[in-house]
Image (cartoon, rainbow, N blue to C red; front, side):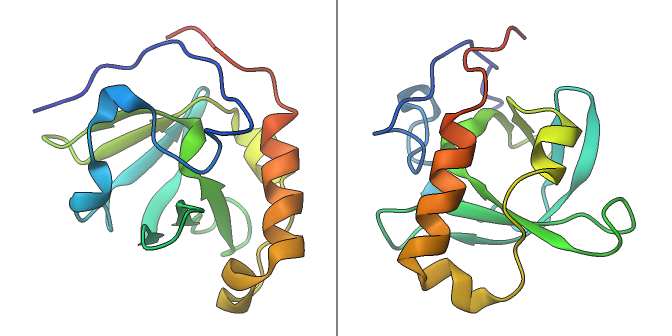
Length: 130
């Protein structure tokens, strides 16, 4: 049951939550899904954090960002296609590459780091077209 990609505005309240039109994707295992930016592939979901109020995906970028992972708040998810196991985000590859650097899993519990990530993604242009 593929979800459609829709235009929406990311707000302060939604940066860490999936858009309502996706239902409850946290109930699905998204690990392994490919992740597409508005201008190309960025990698695959290595793991997801759905157990806190700050839901996010850890995306393994492979060789694209020198084998690093990036933390992506689920508020930028623009589409989830469960049939093709693909997630689309409303950011460009460069915007994701320019996000605060993710180094270790400890950062997923660091309020200062998460605040920086949230502020960064909130500052990006919202409501990109399909």
